Image (cartoon, rainbow, N blue to C red; front, side, top):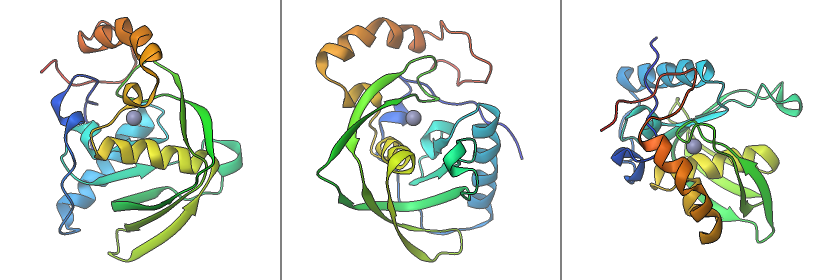
Amino acid sequence: MSLIPITVYGDSILRKVAKPIKAIDDELIKNIQDMFETMRNANGIGLAANQVGLNKKMFIVDLQGLDEYSEFKPLVIINPEIIKYSEELIIMEEGCLSLPDLRADVERSEIIKLKYLDTDEEVQEMEADSWLARVILHEYDHLIGRMIPDRVEPRIKKKMQGDLIRIMKRDIEIDYQISERG
Ligand code: ZN
């Protein structure tokens, strides 16, 4: 396994719509292992493939660091589709490994239903709420090229502008490796 530098705001791959995965082969399994190692090293709870430079429709989730999810098995979510969004919205504070040091309140559906492939190529359906729904919606956004600044009011995005520029310039101090400036 190996750590991979994490892409940050401004990197073009984070704006691409991810390509569906056709085969769950050895290469993909290696990608998944590297993603877990990279995410854990950076203390993340979710990571999308384009955050390690891979244009693949996949993300991982590991909520075991949160008290109420300590027994919850880490997830590998391949080719996800969100098939139901609750009308009830909820505001939660989000961070993102591709937006180091930035946090923002984001409003999203409280409950969702998701369809995806697992690593055994079985189709899975899952209902999620609370933190799980939140992480899934955040990571799913990455796969369609969206990030936190696209999900906040223009007024809040304007306030973020300075931080976003600092991130793009790599004018930040963090304890995990990020991509070279592209
Ligand atoms: Zn993120």
